[in-house]
Length: 428
Image 1 (tube, rainbow, N blue to C red):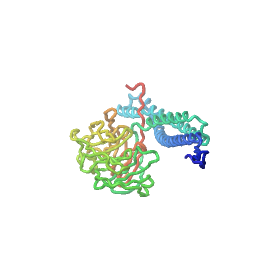
Image 2 (image 1 turned 180 degrees about the vertical axis):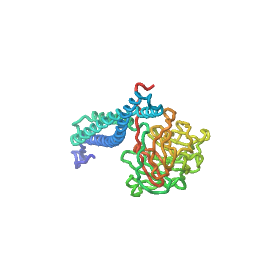
Image 3 (image 1 turned 135 degrees about the horizontal axis):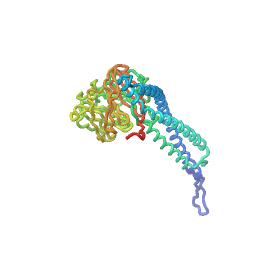
Image 4 (image 1 turned 60 degrees about the horizontal axis):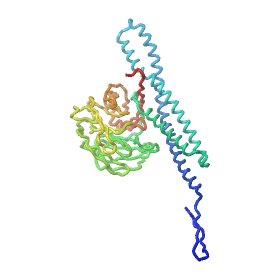
């Protein structure tokens, strides 16, 4: 701020005052300092993202390495069988050949993971070097061309986003766990975090029971959730139906009780922002999952956005997938599957593919998947350990790359392993 010097009078008796302003270079230094602080914050956020990518890649890489040894063993056996197959039963030969065909696509995947691991290490080194440069010039503004520095940060951000898009999407290959986070509530309920939240935001939301409840409990972190330290509660204007709610970009999406209406509730404003009926969707135990509980409409989110999974009379009670606009709740696109909603235990979306379990009880597995990208399905056989015998909620979180589950009054987490589909020159 300018400061006023002591006043005086001129020869004619008029008051004369002098205004002393800060040096122009000082203002310039303040502006550059703010810009540098902003760059430092960007670098710190990128460092956190890179650490997450590194953990994911290393975990999947270990799994792929195990598969590589199996592939090598099968290759040698297959060569031996090929040379002597006249003396072997045709059935045994076909089984071995089928196993080899299943594992063959993992070979290029392994090479891709080796490349990704090297790329992430390179990112970590670049971020470390850039952080040192920024810290070094904070005390000596002007020693580095700011525009060039900003260009380097923008370039690194772009490359990091490209790397993250490659590493976060893929085909589900394995579900491991669960890790039991907490035991609380009734047999049925839902708990979740926001996959669109900033990296420093780790809030948990908790919704007990599948009906006759409007209270959402909020916790600042998973550790607060485990300790039972609530930060806030929300009293929703309508009761919810089922346990298939989702928090996405700061809003709660849930099915209004005894209706096919989807409600978008903003945590920031504490009020309903949007309501919209999901046309023709069955509700109130017309087309629930195998466990019932008004689980007719399942809302979920993945890397590609917000989704609703339900069933209609027009599709003979089979599962329908609709992608929704997160703001208006309008249906953007719809796919009809041939899998009965009443025969599904639970389902979740990953990278635009719906994965369906065949039961909510012990022995459940991911049995069927439907790709919205290709409008095609396939039968799968991916075991999921139902540790507490009754699953009433299973939902994917793209930020954590994990499945959140409510397993008979236990809040659990499953890790997922995704493999990228890598096209070769031989692909048609």
